[in-house]
Image (cartoon, rainbow, N blue to C red):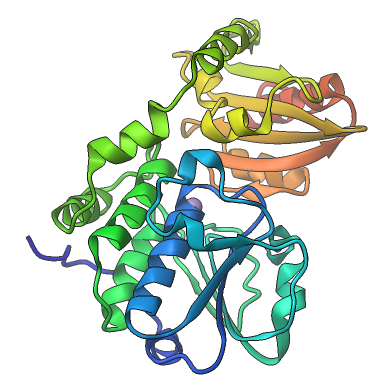
Length: 328
Ligand SMILES: [Mn+2]
């Protein structure tokens, strides 16, 4: 099987910059890296390394346990501070440089080329070269087209990383961003060595017994609005371990209720700060709601941080969703 014919147009300056990069090259991640970010970062990093370009992979947070199965995950260094500048810094799936936790400022010298490859519609365009494709289901789809455009090969290890990127950002090929092209790319990645059952097993069947019991307890605490259109889960500070949150996409459970049009997960992360994950099914644009609170994201998946108590944050979001549904 060949590559899907309707590939993305890779900007020429990007091809020029990355096919034979000069100097020190860094692939830089963000706080709370997800499967799309890591799969894209490691997949592109391996492709460059295999072609003879030494690369450094780093990010402000460690690779979550659930993604340690990715071939090459051990290459990703965790940096608290940046030590010295790089000539080329590549960011994937990163809409806002503040998500690098200050690392981009630390590695960006006067002549550094910053490459910004992303599918978030609200990307801030902070790169020297920006390639933004909001129609792509995952940044992994873009890297899939970029690697052959650079003249590099996709190995089984790279295919596994990119397949995981598509798999996680499409909710296992269930969400509305899943297109014929997404599935053709996934099929091609399987032909090139990605193993769907192994990826799904690593992502969803690695629970410990106590994690399953914790999940059962949390599902019992999902709340639903009287009209059934909004559902949410409140997590008080310190109530759930970080590794559990990284492995479980908890907000998908309130979203899974038939009548629900918008769902959110509210997580108290410290004194008066609540981190919010928002999900929708097409009728409500949660990217706009998140943006109103200083965050951002996609129409059906977004996030923000709200200052206040859990109940204050919940009430503010319920008002915002009611507005979006035209109910006030
Ligand atoms: Mn993504």
